[in-house]
Image 1 (cartoon, helix red, strand yellow):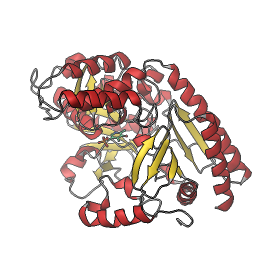
Image 2: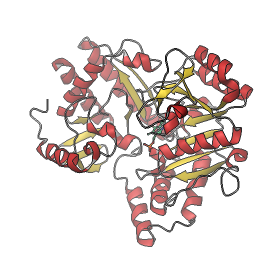
Image 3: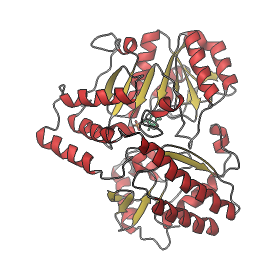
Image 4: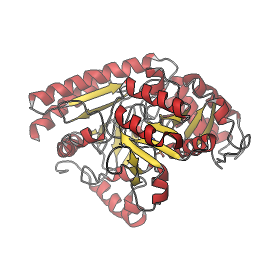
Length: 431
Ligand SMILES: *Cc1c(COP(=O)(O)O)cnc(C)c1O
């Protein structure tokens, strides 16, 4: 499939990596399993471009899965990292840097009255779950099929048979005793939500949701669905956790909760908040956050949490997102691209649906826009793989799975996006 494109070095590096690193990669989606072929090894990035080990230059629609809102190699972020690195790399003790970023995060996410910094999105959601359980003194969690919340045991759970049933482990190594504490129901399904609360409501510590789903493609929630979550949670004394690890600082400066004007009890952030360095954050209502050690009894800790360099990089990005009009412009450009994409798809008799909010979008090879995981699964996944490979040949780097979202940066100019749409036309003709 990589005919005509030089990928010799990437192929060689992957082969060698597989001898030393499990699967050759440090996170599974990177291995290209769902689209076929071998992963590209990158060497350098600038603006909206990636440069691989074979000398190819790509237009990037992954943006390191979110952080590159202002494009790759942002000068202010690089300067902040350099400046901090020469001052100190790490203490494992408090710094002014942490206070600075905490204030910015709170300003953008008013529902987060107090925060705690961790080192990944997984850690953030995991800590939210523990806190919710400790706070409510209940054990069950409701999650939605197709939402990804990191590789936390109790969240790596798939649906049991039938609606509103207890989950089964999504991976060996997760005890059934644990997965049974997770109730999984379809996204946007109010009836299933009501049924789940009716059956288990008194035992539910929290409902965790991606308030715009980004890990089954890009799926918007129905507002009435989010309202139902709030209402039932309040009724039964459960907490609402918004996992905005992907949507925070992406669909809007203040995430999906800014768009929909909802205030969850707890929020998890990641990806973008570190400006490209590994950072996670969780936070929420003061009285809940006060239950965390050392003030409260619920334990959570991290030796390198709030690392000064990581925090400086994050702050350098977040400061530049002050002007909210960035998100309007991202969406405007993105829409232009998606309209063109739909136009060329239509010309080639390919059904395509799409959706976008701020600098994050998704497209599906389906007639209607999917509303849940099952509907995404019913889109033409095989066509996506061929499209992905074709676009790669055209030096356009899309997420290597039909179940991922795409990311734009302020460096994706209209001209670059029009070029990408032209390439898509060419690829549609050939597949
Ligand atoms: C990526 C992601 C996570 C996990 O974050 P990691 O940093 O990979 O651990 C959790 N939730 C959502 C919504 C994500 O997109």
